[in-house]
Amino acid sequence: MPLNTQVHGRLNAFFNLKNFTDVVTSLPKPETPMTDILFPPAKRKQKTSPSIAVKDIENATGAVPVVVRGSHSYSVNSGKKSIASIEVQPLSMNKFVSGADLNSLIAMGDIDSVKAKLTETVEELKDRTAASTEILVCQALSGKIEYPASIEGGGTDVYTVELGNLKNVGGSKLGASSTLADLQKLLEAQYIAQKQTGAASDVRFLAGDQIYSKIVELVVNATGNVPVQWTDFGCTLFGKYKIMQVSATYALPGETDATDVIDPKSIQTIDLNNTGKLFYAALDDLDAKLQPLPFFATYEEKKDPSGVKVISSSKPLPAFAVSKSTIKKYLN
Image (cartoon, rainbow, N blue to C red; front, top):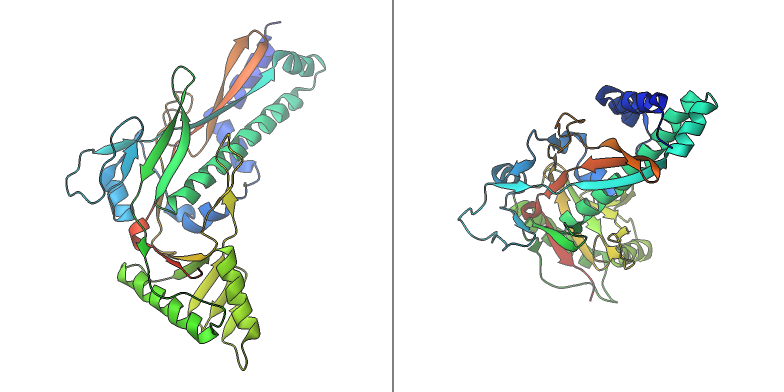
């Protein structure tokens, strides 16, 4: 059964760019904790090109990126630039809405439910896009993005972007007999290493589960006046070291194994004022007027079975400033 003209009219009205933008803006914001920490709205940049200039990423991260997808990688240690821009790969998803469902709503005179059905579909795609962007951000924190990519013919590849190497802080570790004073020395050594990156105006210590538990243990067992302030993100020690527990994990599409965002025994430092930028490249979609929207969806009519396939698109590239971040393992 073909879609009737009323359905077509409702679809075209819904996916009008202005109306669609209003709908998306009104939807609840998905939970994206790492994206919000590293790339708050002020650090999100929309580019009017399907590619991101290497120079822009260098300015944001302090390093030349590497992009590998069926090609040779580019050494971040080389002074020779072999590429001028990065073609950002899209996050594209779809969901089918049957013509029978839409026509039934029209036949019952329930016009508002057509918009509600489309809004529900778009919200699901938006949430999935936000979740995928969150994974890219979590991977970028380590300096390397590796995300599965579909290729023509039904095969899969890996979309890889190497943003640089974290500064590894060596030295001693905490043991069974370590004290709060020992912890302070290690934190200070990492803080100094962070300052040496040139980014230390608002330093945050991102702590894995095991080391954070060890820190809490040392604080609780310490005698005398313990210099700790408990906060909404974790704790501040000695009025200087802002420590945030990061227990988050992620699983790539099609996989069940979870990966820790931060190694459980390690702490990674970042400067909240120097985290890089979350770029959005221009979409390859005429309905979106080729704009660099963080999220957009359109539709195409299907004949067998009759209905519409709602298709979403987003082109995020989280360019985390890896060269302005350090990592240290605190536990054996």
